[in-house]
Structures are given as structure tokens and as C-alpha cells.
Image (cartoon, rainbow, N blue to C red):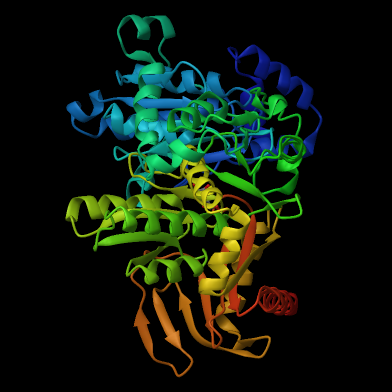
Length: 576
Ligand SMILES: O=P(O)(O)OC[C@H]1O[C@H](O)[C@H](O)[C@@H](O)[C@@H]1O
């Protein structure tokens, strides 16, 4: 159907929600906006859906949230009654309409006689993952657009283990979402009736307490925290999001009492008024924390994104200036501490495993190997880390020690099955305390890791492919890489090419072997000097991402190599 026809259907609805009706009126005559909103449905995939808020079948609004939830409900209808009656846990972040969307989801589930457990106020994504496990619900829904700009919102689905659903199940839900084509015909139950019939229950403090008790268990050395925790100075910013509700309590419960929250950013605000993007990957997210850190002489600055699943950090350098750490550096220093402290405590299991994505740093592999611990590499997406944990638990063959992605996501203990910035904040504080006790800072700690294991450097660059032809152009780029395969980058030979779409690894001499991972449109090259280069279309944005990871004997040499390979990749792409 054309966007004009879809638009007309919306215009002619007799019972349109008044504020959406008003938004439609504002859009009248703006063909570009109307085309974007009405040409096709929102895409619903393995990560659920995410998009700009506004009227139309292609944007996030009450009707598209109802449609997505209807898909979830129809899926649950196919399961046995006992599973269905376990219901769905629902949380939401601090964005515009997040609370409203969470309740709309409950109303749709209620119309199917499916109970829901909705948080009384915003809560982090990892706490929703925890709630699914704690309340033993059949599924979970998180209303969030993570660290996207304020115009966005999203709908994420979780399976009974608390992990984002693996493709095999989420594909079924996607089918059901697509089958609910008439968004205006989806039945919704009345909030008051649902509450009376116990089909909608409000949860909050009870789950918080259980979650916080678990978070306290991620610390390893209680004596250390006792000694240093009270004096070590931290600055924490929740960047106007859900971390405010629980991050403060988590730090305090773990014994870190000497911290200040950036006051302006400890106010939940869907405008995210103090930052250009509420994303701890961006330096500007730290501007206020740095100013406060300098005033207070803080050792460590920590920022969590609006749904508190990602964590960024900055550490004080000897000069008094702060240096931002990358996701790879934060993960490496957390991992090195976990392995060291657990070994010292006699708690390092021989069958321990660390899990990371294929685009994350090899420094972690080297650290793990130094402790005789195996590294498992999985595709990008924390659901694949959750899937590993589930497997270890059911097969009893490995013990999960740590999981991470370079995109600022880490998980320490599996009472949550997604990245957890609250757990990570608490453990990172303990790591800082450990260095402080040794008369060092986290900055020195990173230097120490490099001096021991080699200087590792990584970079991700993304090329955007906006517009209607974007997907096609991205496909063309990937095809070019496959059909006119490069032999080298910057004159360093490619020794192995991994094509995850066929699951085949090919050496320069033509020998092949199988990659033991699900199929995905990803290419990874291993070079003669140990450098790796990976290319994949983003699963969440219209971008192709290029990742480079290298290492050398000095920092300068590693940075130079990184710059050379980045230029070589850019040159190859420009030649296509
Ligand atoms: O596909 P990308 O844009 O690189 O995003 C990848 C990210 O997608 C989601 O946010 C997942 O929750 C993350 O675990 C994953 O890292």
C-alpha cells in the first residue's frame, strides 16, 4: 500500500488518541515526514523494534506498541496455559511515552488474559532481565531506546531465562507481529479491570531489594572495600536515566559511600538537556562529571546510559586531567581483576569461561589465557552471551566468569542475562579501590596491563547508509568485499578470512574449516601481524561498521598501526 493510503486510513480513524490526532494535524502537508511515517511498518527483529516516536505505522507510538505486544501475546497463546499464566514483566526508561507504552503493553496482554508485572517507575534494562528470572515470568518487555537521541523509543523482548530472545523464538514473534496488520483493531483491556482481576500487578521495591542483594554479591574482596571503599572518591552520572533509581543504592550497599552524583544529571528527564546524546561512549557525556571530578579530586568517573545497561568511565591521570576509557579497556581491567581476585581467593574454577563478541579486544583473550581460562567468541549482540550462559548451566560443562562487548556492555554475574551497568559500576569501583590500595590509579592499571600483555588498540568506524536505498547499498558493499576479496591491508597479508554468512574460514593457501557460530552477514580478516579487521552491517542502525584491532610493543606503535589500517580500510571502501 502507498504511504498516501496508509495515511488516509489513520486520518479516517474515528477514535484516534487525541494527542496523536494533534500530531497528525501538525504533519499535514509535510510529505517527507508523512512518507517516513507511513510507507511501511516498523521493522521488528531480534532486538525488537526501535525508532523515532510519532504517528504512523513506521514510527513508535501507542498503536505500533500495541501491534508488537499483540505479537508477543499471540506467541504466548501458542504455549501451554501454565507458561502463559506466568505472565510478562514490564519495565520502562525515562523517555517520553515510556510509561504509557509499558501500560499499553499490559492492556494488550490483559485482553489475552495474560498477567503482567509492571514496574511502578522507570527501572534499568538489567533489572528487567533480573525481574524475569526472579518472578519466573514467561517473558519480559523493556520500553527503551537505550542511548539513542530523545526522539527515539523502543520495545525489547526477553525470554524466560532473562536474555534477549534468540532468533529461533524471536522469529516466531516477528511472524505474529506481522500478522497483526490492523493496528486499530487490537483489543485492549481496561487498566482498572486488569488491576482488580490481578492481571496487572505493580512491582517495585520488592524486586529492587532482591536485585540489590544480588548486585552486592559481585564484589570479591570485602576487606578491601571496608578499608578503601569509604575514602575513595567517585563521581556517578546516570545521564538523566534509570541508573538514578538504583545505581546510588547499589554503590552504597556495596560499601562505596564516598560518591557524588552529578546533580543536574541525576534528574530523570526525557529531554536529556545537558548532553547532546545520552551515550557514555561520547566524550561530551562526561563534561559535567569531569568538572565535578576536578573540584572534588575524584579517582573515578562513571556514567551509565538511560537504561543503565552500558557503562562508560573516565580515570584521573597523573596530570589531574581525566582520560576516557574505551569499552575494551573497561572490560579488560574488570576481567583482569576478576581473574586475579578470584585466584587469590581460591575461587577460580578450572572450567571457567569468558565470553566476548568477535569484534571485541584480543587483549582480554590474552589476559584469560594467562590464567588458563578459555575465551569463547560469539556474534555481536548480548543475547549470544546469554545463550552461552544458558548452555553452561544446562550442560554443566563451564562456569561463566565474565562476558562483554566492546560497545560498553559487560556482565559479571548471571543473575542478569543482559549487559548490566549497575553490576559493572560496583565492580569497577572495587577495581579502583584495589589500585588505590597499591598507591595506583585505574589509569596506572591500564598501563600495567599493556606493559604485561602488549599494547592493544582498537577502533570502530561506521559509514552511514540513510534513505530508502540504504539497505541495498550496504548489501552491495558486503558483496564487493566478498567478490573482489582484498589480499592485504596496508601491505600486510591476509592469512585467514572468516565469512560468517557461509560459516567458512579460508586460509591464504585455500584450506577451509567450519566456523561454529550461527550465520550472519559478517566478514573478519586475520592479518599476518595478528591484526584483525571485521566488517558488518549494524543490526540497529543504517550503518556498516568497520572494526580494527591491533597490537604492538609500545603505545605509539600500536596507535600508528591502527591509523594505517584504518586508512587502508577506508581506501578499499572508497575504491568500491
Ligand atoms: O548492531 P549494532 O548496531 O552494532 O548494535 C549491536 C548492539 O545491539 C543491541 O543494542 C544489543 O543489545 C547489543 O548487545 C549489541 O551490541
